[in-house]
Image (cartoon, rainbow, N blue to C red; front, side, top):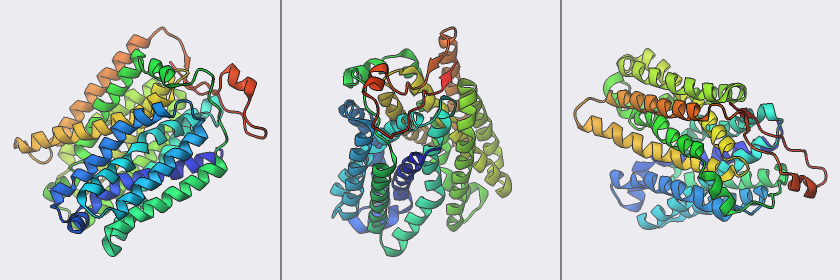
Length: 413
């Protein structure tokens, strides 16, 4: 694996840290800007709003910009957004800063996934993309707890400043390690939008929203479930959330090789295992050890879904995969909002704290139905390249002297 993947993983680590650290610092932020904790919780929604809007918007605006330069521009916006969050004097400006910080999230992952897949040989494309995603999962083990502790000890603004420093490190790593990847003559917003019109891309995005919504239906209420049903103390839930991160990391390590070998079967298996794990958690949540084991497994199978969907979207978007790859992260944030909303509905209806697990299982199975439908509709179309490394015109113009040749992508059947 080339060192450029390390730079992309650092970017993902910073994104994962800033996305989730706010949740651990809501009381401190609320005190700092003079609002209630529930009102401060809108900052989480502000970041998600930035992701949903920014992924297609910034990817479209940057459709003709070479990938490396676009990554650097997006990283600069990430630094500005988090620095503005640290300096915001009131809630209104902090809300705006969190939207700004979320804008480059999806585009960074989308462009990064395309770049990663083109750095390696065809049979290793999914492993390259999952290597970048490892930065996101490791952030849940290291970055978020460290940022939370920093914010609790020194003040919440220091946590955002720290993320800004991570952004500077990522910017430097991208500048020095990622090779130039020229855009083809057909690149542009119209070309990307035309690729987004592919029916398989639409099905893949809906599968991400529905299927991964099952994951977030439980993740959003995991802490109250553990305190009310498992009997864990508030202080121990941080370690349990780290277990989630461990499971996600292990799942991501497995997802790359499996996706390279069999993309759709890996996606189907991930959704089946997620549904089974969530049903198991519904019964296991009342006992500490079974609950912890199941939580780790849920994190793992949740990550097992991410890479196949990302690679499937890139495959079906054909020669213009960047916007499809970025829009996947808009879909995941919609899954976050939808899963949390449905989980809250059943809790509010009096079905009990464990009920979101059953809602999540139903969503995972619905996602499986969508994924299988897409597979059946796609049957007989043969094999299609996930990401063409470069068009013939790009090869004519060539990459810069001394740069490694790009891989051709993997295949999906």
